[in-house]
Amino acid sequence: MSDRLITSLTNETVKAVRALHMRKEREATGRFLAEGLKFIGEALDQGRAPRLLMVGEDARPHPILDRAREATRTAGGEVVIVTHAILEKISRRDNPQTVLGVFDQVYAPLSAIVPESAPCWVALEQVRDPGNLGTIIRTADAAGCGGVVLIGDCVDPYSVEAVRATMGSVFAVAIARATAAEFLAWRQTWPGSVIGTRLDASVGYREAAIQRPALILMGNEQAGLTDALAAACDVNVKIPMRGRADSLNLAIATGIMVYAVTDAAQVSHRRP
Image (cartoon, rainbow, N blue to C red; front, side):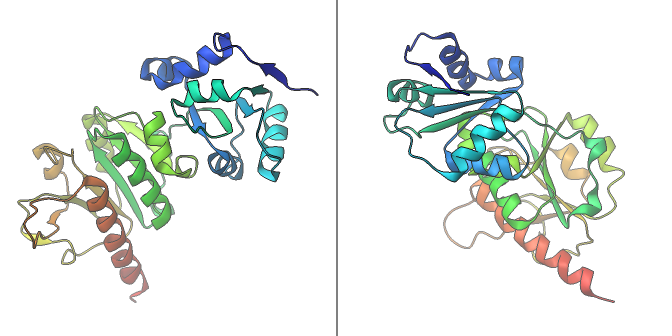
């Protein structure tokens, strides 16, 4: 089967893919854009085929690209060949990736989460920076966390900026969404420890007793955890600031917590 060639910047398919930079279009279509062979390969490894695969006319042959073409067609998607100018316009970069994929968004309902399936999970309240969110998703993947729960008015995890920051982990990590009320009701069924982070906490992050599975609750970049969610935690902890800086970047703080809590959970799990 020959692939369709698109050369016009005003082509309707090009317009539709470019529109995925806008949140309202992603929400309307339930789709998102991922750029580059690494992302495409991660998606294929997780059984996720593109709905649309855009291949630059100067793209070099590659086994992942061959897999992507086959998987896209098998799933009923379309493969199109596009010019370098089209790739630049869609990616909004002067040096774009030569392969782009359009994928379906996937959200896990809270009811489908099995806490015991992983030693650690992350919940984020009203995170606003897409780079932070993408990095946290990538960190959760690296540490073997079960998934990430987004609480309240969070940035879109499927924005182009957030997806780029995940480095492909957006396909491997379960992502759930909930209102604060939904989260608080669901939290009541959590079988392990729920750990919040607060600058005014009295317990150090290495001192808290952790029961597996652990749920780490992180707050907004500026305001931190709201009182309502902090009160729902079994314990609130702090990461000590020993220098002049009075706080850490949210993604860095989450990474510290994830590895500290995961290690603690694993140690606890090995005890008789």
